[in-house]
Image (tube, each protein chain N blue to C red):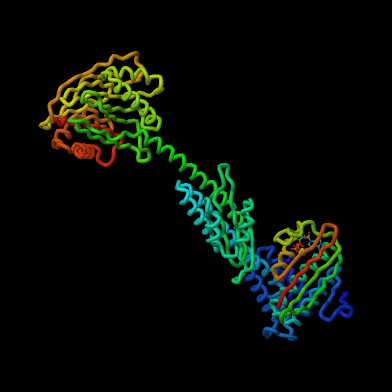
Length: 482
Length: 140
Ligand SMILES: Nc1ncnc2c1ncn2[C@@H]1O[C@H](COP(=O)(O)OP(=O)(O)OP(=O)(O)O)[C@@H](O)[C@H]1O
Ligand SMILES: [Mg+2]
């Protein structure tokens, strides 16, 4: 087979000797051959010039609209190049398609980002705003409005273009998607309205509208996706809010109440849950008046920090208070609590200290595995109040023997009860932690009369620093005298 | 050659295509009409190339057919329309063959896609077994 150049020379030669459509059609074939063989426009032009020069043909004068003038060589070259023109136009086509594709990718990206963002907040109103933002981003050029709740119709109508009422009425009649276009003074307006039903109720209504070109198929598909996403996101957030409200109320009911002191006995307390989200954990204190100018004082700690610990704590708290108010001795209270609660609390157990203290300074105490309280003498000397110790309640030991300690303290003495969250430090031994506590309480100035709570807050703040790793409960009582 | 201008209105030229001669006649008629309508040299070549492609397809796949060329003026702009009509075997899926590369084993399959791009408007109407009509239009 002749080379491209040989072929070109022979066909062009023939055409120049006798110009006509046959020669031009053959030139078109040469162009197709060049394409097939992977030659470029440049090669074809170079070949053309080479062949012309070799054959010694004179240059043709060419002006646009050359009219009747004959320019067979130029006609030939143009015809040979014509097949290359279509791929050029095809390239333009592909570029436009690519641009379109890129816009689609952007729209889809906006949708994905919207879902991420929307799920990062639990507030239904925030989610609604994020839905609006996402729709505005992914439906470029459109205005977007959302509305939810009883007033949604008025809310939405206030935001929609004035003549959208008709379309919205159609929507109310139970449809989940409406698409409408109409002519306004400013040109055509296109409107989309959607609400996606969810298994737990109707979601928010979302509307998008724009002037000029109608929404594309992709726009409409995205819009419906967004409305579904928004429905689920907002109704879930509402459900979550509702359930969280229930949880908060239940938790609050478990929180210790600030105790009131009795005549001659000043009280202070402090409660800090370890997790900012949960307002209650397994630690608790309680204080209540008993007959004979005495106070009942309780501090305890249920194993674990979760909601279950909090629930079990509530049971312990009531049990202790109930038996204490019946007038039992501290050891008797622990025995009864053990009896009652073993069956109620499953695998859980608690450390628990119950003491009674009278205005005269007499104290009875039974301690089921709880850290020993601290006694701060009137002159400020701090020491642990040991004794009366037995195993924690409900650990499953067969009928543990509870012991009791009694003591008498002078006026001005402060008793300091706490849970282990106050003293435990990661990386420190328990002994070191206890020593630190004793040290801190010795260093602290003696509480002034009537300022026990402020003193208590200061001591706790100095011991916990930034924030406790565990729940912290503190109860302090001062023998104020009468 | 079957150019029959005398039976048609002045601005219409019908070329009977059966074999290579017919392809050349269609080219010639298209070129003359384009020049007369004031097309540039480059556009004249584009129109001629597109007409050549559809005429070749008639000669190759349908054996015979007719190419109708019309000179039109819309809003003062001259335009040339082409209808290439045959009653050959037809095309099963016309939407495919207007894309690149849907040819026979030994062809590039660029004929119809080229014609589509070289012209402003382009459509193929065809049913398998029922002939093919390609309509094209380009403004000067
Ligand atoms: N008039 C017609 N009648 C029947 N089939 C046709 C007709 N025109 C085109 N076709 C079919 O469409 C296909 C594509 O046509 P096209 O002109 O794009 O490519 P081709 O003729 O195969 O290759 P090329 O034109 O690049 O040499 C052809 O292969 C043929 O199968
Ligand atoms: Mg072809």
